[in-house]
Figure 1 (cartoon, rainbow, N blue to C red):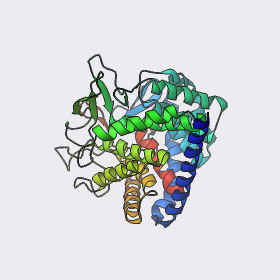
Figure 2 (cartoon, one colour):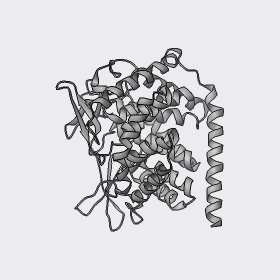
Figure 3 (tube, rainbow, N blue to C red):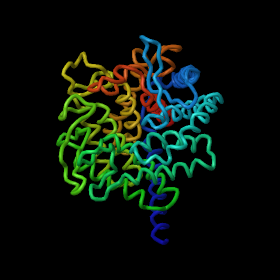
Figure 4 (tube, rainbow, N blue to C red):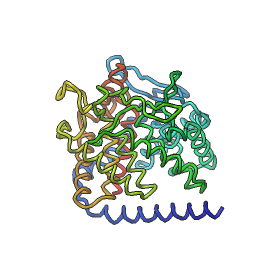
Length: 401
């Protein structure tokens, strides 16, 4: 019991220390006047778009993407890994616009999502439940939300294997234990669970997963593989490959974004400088890459063979921008200015054509030109819910920085 109290006190001190540092360092950034002046309209436009999107949704269905040529909206059930982004975006929009219609829609769509708290077949419960109920707890808290999130964290932990040192990403009938870089994004749910319960087991699983991933997922230049195949009996690495990228040895853009964001979150919650070092290395790989365009919205893969004609991925740009706006508050002045300036450029790009959709278009989605899975030929150059989610998060971070 004493250990748990001491552990919780340490976490609390860390959070307060980092919050103080965040506030101190955040005062030195010069914001773009035009972008800053447009923020209110950006959120208003986003709210208008999401009302259009809501009007097209059938009960208990979640938006996936929209196809302009056929004017068709693709949806999913609550078990799809992206189900949490739609309510999460609505909560961001409500917090900025105070439009109660957006809040009502967010609360409505949470109801069919609740059952996923017991879903042990997916590693994406952070995306699904923390991006939704985690934001709900901040914006419009209800007593049951805490238990839903705790149950979600417990379900996620069932996928952890101490032999491998990771949370399993994809189930397989083959003798393999598959872990993808995306899984770094689900660890924040576990840190939340430790923070509210004082139970360090959630914390230890998150740290162990991050350490194993840091050891095996990254190349010498700090680019990341997408998929690591571990031997489920010994924990040894059997293969390093891609699923959604161009090639096994290429740098899939959104994968680099997941890593950047994930290790920034790791530093926030642990204060362990090795995670800050890792996040800085990833940021420098991304921002220093010769194939990063001037508008800072990356091609879908940094090594795509048809650059500069390759498709851009607005979702990767949105995730990167949000991560950099946090990371810039933890680093020295020179790096901080570089990160802030790059994130600002990304947001200026995303806030206008061709990435931002015209009002009344795009099926109600906010951003255009994201890339889901080119090798599989799905969700290619379309709007995606996670692009909108991290774009709204990044704009809010920019506003409050």
